[in-house]
Length: 345
Image 1 (cartoon, rainbow, N blue to C red):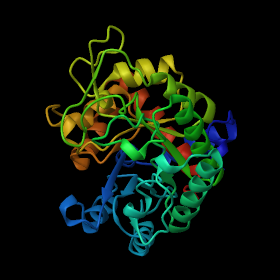
Image 2 (image 1 turned 135 degrees about the horizontal axis):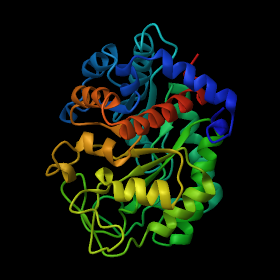
Image 3 (image 1 turned 180 degrees about the vertical axis):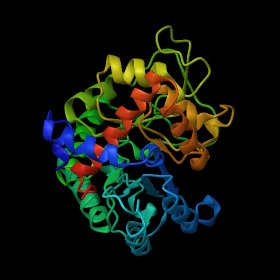
């Protein structure tokens, strides 16, 4: 059960260790990589490409970006038949099913109100439950939601947020996480440490948090009070901040944000996932996929080159001992999650 993810269980630790030992190094590396597929031709992510990545044991999960709900369900069944042959570990599937985007991402799904229109906690809970129930029936087990950012950023956040009142955002995000995970679907709080109080869209270019991390307290409270299994780190770049400046790099590839702030200072022990690595905010960051791993990300979402990233991770296991331990811990987090979701048979 998903609630066991954070439990102190020697039995669960033992199960994870057994499955870790069964996997090849290449298959271990795959657990840290989630690619994507989409029916939208402009995305350049055809299903045949995803099939090849799975058949070659290069990825451990897949994001369904945009397409018909029924087709995605058929594709999940097909991928399950080729996932890591000879082993018990299956792929894990995800979607960007925020309330505002739900029916746009999964064509044919019954719409729910936009996040900005969910005024009462009960409405948030019902929306989270409806989304979780719908995607779970398809075989999708991770929802990259809720958006815990302020709505101030009209370029990309806007009505995807619960509003501009931090207290409201906190309460509604907590309700969304708990309601989702009660349905045995992973909830992912995003975009840490805050994409709502900045100008610009990281899909289109570099975006700056200039000075203090004004949204950090909201994220801290949501994380501490709802225990989300995942937190997504955004691609904003922090400057003019003496404690958390990212030295010109996006947060998603910064150890200052991932290791120092999120994992150490906030004590987050769940799975840290990057935002999609194909976004233009990373265009000026060479080897961004690998830098995210070095910075402490447990799961790299939509890498620019999944095949190369898998190879880099494989090589790192036999290189630096400290990095090897970090990678092992990340793989075991992913295996622990898969067991809790029933993906390790």
